[in-house]
Figure 1 (cartoon, rainbow, N blue to C red):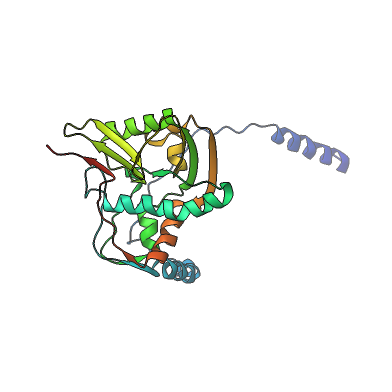
Figure 2 (figure 1 turned 45 degrees about the vertical axis):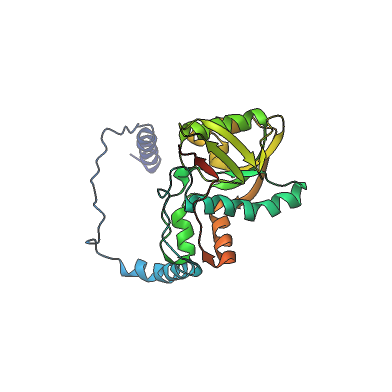
Length: 252
């Protein structure tokens, strides 16, 4: 066999091997438990350490002081922490909305389940804001017709839960039935259109708040609720929210 024949022979073998199909017949794996017993890779630890320290320094920066501990279970129809969050959204977002549209936000509605942690008595930090609102929910303003606002009121009355609201007042009778609803001391006019601030999760139907789906306009403020809280904490210095009469049930 000469050199040419030898090369031709090896080419045939190579071409033949390229046409072979490979099939995956079995996948094997094992469970690796992650705990503090795992050996630390010092190289990785040394690399991550300065970044971790920088993040923790920012998260632990003190923004305000809370005079008490606040939890979303401290009231039946409204809570101090929920009132604070809804009021913060109004106070921080209304100037942005008014600057863009020339109009005011009429009221705010957030969701009870969106409050993910308590605020403990003492220093309030950036980390506190991340714990209370760990999600990247953003503030939006929706124009709702009176019919949709009526559905919103009906939803809150039926839920009988402390969903955070601001500027809106709802009164139930002693039997828990709807009695009245108003804004700034005036009864709601269900023939009007209202600017309602909420978060994008609820706007997209979260917590079955489907009344947001039918709307006249949507304004995206590009302002995360978490950042609303951070800016609000910086501004007020001392945190002292209360349970009030924005959503109540009358007694006999």
